[in-house]
Length: 205
Image 1: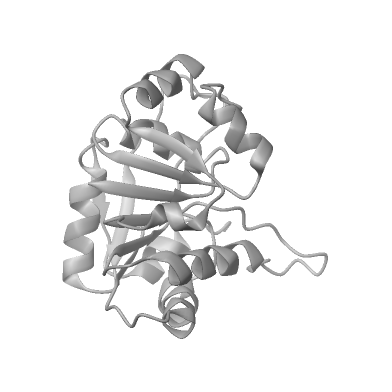
Image 2: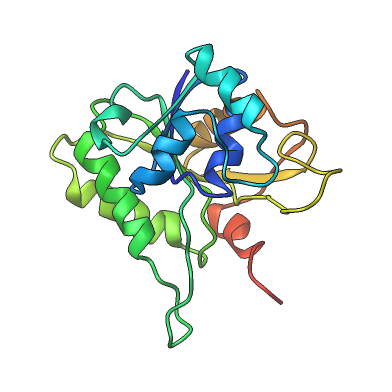
């Protein structure tokens, strides 16, 4: 499958490196310096070895880009962008909003859109889906799902392959496609009852 990962920070690049073992991966990021570095085979993220990145580039399985048009033809788009808090300690949704805009303006067929970014319950259902639909010129019927990122920087014993991953789609079809995607490079997947349950798992108690 052709997979586009929006955001090439510690979450997005980690997913890209594992997914590229099985899929053709496009890593989108707005930082030109980061993109140039990645396309030179140099990783800026702990846990993603430059040698692995260079291997996938040479094999034609990975490329980084700042051009939103390069995500055309994707079967799956993963949102893996920062979600910091504002000075009022409210979620800053600007990065997710920008990712939705990139998807809406460039995707040219129905896709599965998976959010990995940490956010409040209801983000996929009440923010991402309506925004993509509002901004899209082509009214495709996309599928939507959540699988919260599970990256623990500095840990050598757990990685994307052996860390259990929660997921849920807005529809049974979205859940099935999400499982199919992640099972290609993750050992253990746990389907939960709704996207909101998966989103809640990242909240501090």
